[in-house]
Image (cartoon, rainbow, N blue to C red; front, side):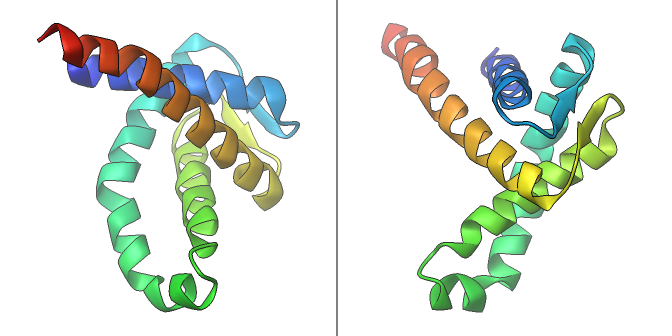
Length: 118
């Protein structure tokens, strides 16, 4: 149940990014759900490896390079899901920032309430 909630939250965050960021396009709810699922896997499997490989850049930029890593993960997800398109790196960067903020807010509102019930 917790995994399904995370996928739905990611899908809603992707739809928000498509709404707010020009250059991020999602053709409907199914590509958003697929994007939410793939983004979860990319964040769990690919992002840690990218963070480790880019650690020197992250240290030199005082952590700002993490935004680039998030944009790469977001672009990878868009590349794997039909119906989820990006116009370029800047759209991926802004889209990943929107997804991060929306996911954080939704997780704070919904997941904490679920955890308190247990």
